[in-house]
Length: 261
Image (tube, rainbow, N blue to C red):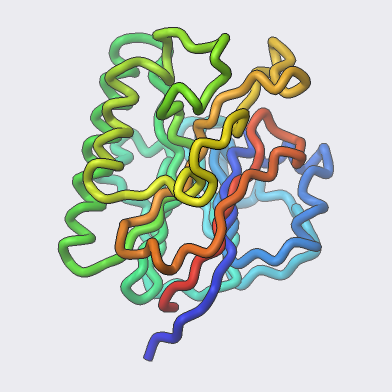
């Protein structure tokens, strides 16, 4: 029989797992109560490259490495035992290591690194298709009676408030078609946990450009999100951004939620 349990879920685009380990940027993990740590853009080519990040003993570490060396990749460090795990290669058709799906009873956790569409028209079309295919799959799982948690780097700022006003232009990550794809999640019953808890709080960002020293100026974008299916609203206890954690051009985000495990 499943039991209800409060879990802390963190999500972080680390922009290279080995690089962040060299910066000793994970020391804070040892003092932070965490049940599921979802990482994106790990850039590992093999499991043997996995660095030791902290002293904390996790129950399991799941890696989905990209078939392209030094590119993309995801990881989940877990204190919980998943019933099932899948890399969703029907969605991640280029085997970029973009998705880890873990099932805990009737709750399904997705750790996702959505494609970046800025290189050319073909990459943008691929990003849009990934969004649509992934949303269709989540909806299918909900129709089967599952609750959904999606965390990761969406590579899209959803609303004007989600990036510095002086930086809003019709460019990659903020085009109408990309924002519309994000809107589809909201319209179809997925909740932006940070906005649900904090409303229209301004200057809440998760990514800053190294090139323009965006962190120092707090000229950033909120492109990292944790969405939950609307049936989990009553279970959501908190959502937060850990903007003071450094080591990547992104910062960690998280939620505390009570779910059946």
